[in-house]
Image (tube, rainbow, N blue to C red; front, side, top):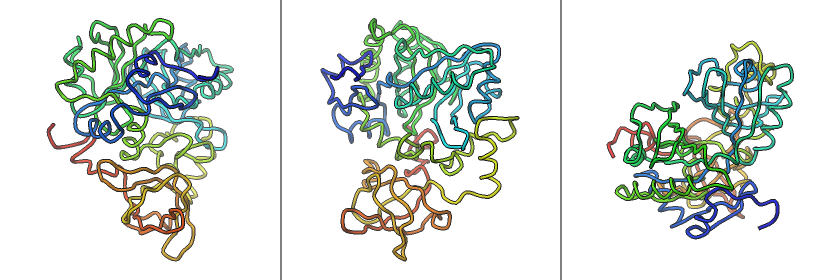
Length: 381
């Protein structure tokens, strides 16, 4: 491990049970049993992820709501305490600095949970733009452990060790509970497309990780009945891609706008002002020239980042930003930005894989049948 490599509260547990990799400067589990069995456990039952590498920033003070409505694109005034919403934060040119979930803990206290890659960047951006606002901004990432329990039996798993009635926590809502006698803040959110929860263990620092280790083991024990699997970053990536969710640095960055990324639903133009509003409003009025699409391979092959995409006339129209083999669909899938004229669902494209072209088609998100999989599923588990 280099001096710059970081570890989470569960590093010693992962070292014994997982294959590790370095991601965003952290030594993290890539896989345990394997990407495909971990992926399918989440789609069909339940899996648990250590996501303590993510950023957690507390924003509080009398101007906290007003400041956040200036700094981010969504409208936090719509949140009641114990409510959450997805949002992005843009630069002055409308480019995405990061995407994240914002939680309203109290009337004048919020928490932003952001990508591990952008922990320092996000904190510094908030501090830089807080001048003139009566707010306190504090990075609490290293003092709080964070797990994601995802899948159609996630609620049943956690209910076995929870003091709170988890059925009362709606999607993008939060609450307090004790899990296996560990005090937690629990949110019905996630990054897999499935129903599930993200859990914050406040009293679990890097130097005193006992509560995190205790709860990790308790959740694995509670989920045995449902075939729970500990899951690594490999399955986390294939799951989010099947669900059509963006990965910062691949599918969104400071050169893409939320409108191009099909994240316009988190941009509230009715707000008086927010960073990037003028540019985004101009883009909305003039119309975007490209947008993010899903590509499902018809012919054999796995689309990988930077693979070029061509239309039927042989013109290059874009490149893959994220791509993988879908364990559920058993074919290659990917994301890309293509011109609006080429973005129609069902449009056939060609992905250049090494020295040959393989056919794929433009599809909607998520890639899977939302009536059979994901949090909107209609089939019983």
